[in-house]
Amino acid sequence: MVNFDGSEIFKMSSTLAPTNQISQRISNLAESATLAMAAKAREYRAQGIEVIALSLGEPDFKTPSHICEGAKQAIDEGKYFSYPPVNGYLDLRQAICNKLHRDNKIQYTPDQIVVSNGAKQSIANAMFSLVDPGDEVIIFAPYWVSYKAIVELAEGVPVYANGGIDNDFKATAAQLEAAITSKTKVVIYSSPSNPTGSVFTREEMTEIAKVLARHDGIYVIADEIYEYINYTGEHVSLAAFPEMYDRTITVNGFAKGYAMTGWRVGYIAAPSWIAKACSKMQGQVTSANCSIAQRAALTALTEDLEPTFAMTREYLRRRDLVMELLKEIPGIRTPLPQGAFYFFPDVSWYFGKSDGSTTIQNADDFCMHLLDEAQVALVTGSAFGAPNCVRISYAASEENLRLAISRIKEVLSRLA
Image (cartoon, rainbow, N blue to C red; front, side):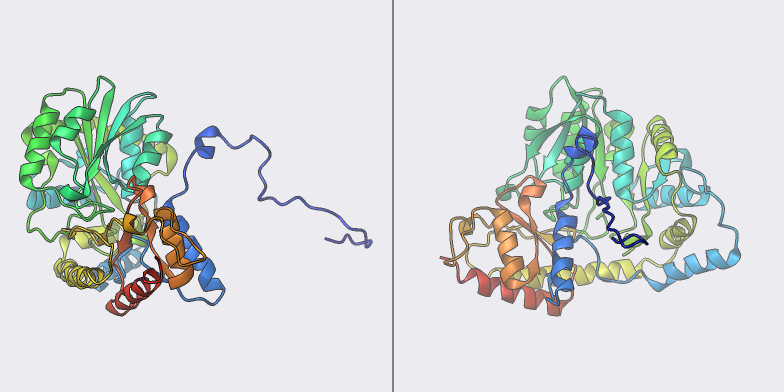
């Protein structure tokens, strides 16, 4: 920069943090791999290189029009411009109770519901409300990237129950039992699963509930955000088992099933004392969720669900398409997902292979090679606790899915 008298002045970049001033808590925190890959894809686009992003877990559908109309009506009524209650509007919490009774056969009252700024905040509220430093948290792996980070921020100790590919990546009741110690405080899992698309059956959930019933003082965070994107015909909630009702925090929201990612509305249903603690936590961090987003969520719960079911039918069609396309690529080993909108193939067959200039050593290299050479963005499985795998989102158009997998097939064919 130049001063008014022509002399130069120097300004230190405000992006450079003073040495050792960032807390260890944040310094040790891993960046979200899904968001990092999305950022890389944006860098390519800024250079004029079009990237097909199969990395983010975001529906490619628009929010159904009747939900948007509900938000517009709330604005026009002019009644929703003040701070809402921290735990959410009463009528929305009652509608969530009605939904849980109708769909999940679980009885709750509004004081057991806390509406948050997305299901991620719901999980964080619950984790911080339950976990003290040194408490162990069993994470069913492969796991959503933020579970581990949230446990570590709460100063808990992550412990993994690893579901193998031969069991559709689902941890078993026996693995859960083996992971439990005197320090275990919380178990967290998702079904349908991000990143694998696996869905726990009623029989599997029954066995898990039996294990947990033998161990007092362990609570479960059941992430059910993909509930409606389920191809099995049955979604099983752990809280519906009587012995687990008082020890389960059910997490859900509107991002996936209603294509409302940007509206940022999630919620928990839990024992009232846990809900009260989560509301206390939220009151000191963000306070309530956006008032207009809550009115949109109320519309989503109380009006036509057909758009949600139509989206699920389309995801199922895309799943079957992608499965057939992946079968044409040598070395790709994958179960058939039963829910969500992801494939999670084992790609270790390619480790050690080279195209003459690049050698694939691991899943990170695999993803970066496909981004560089095929302009397709995936997410490395190492971020989900499965370093031999990658996550492929099929929340994309058929045209882009066909083109992306064709590019992947061509680039991988050069490796030997």
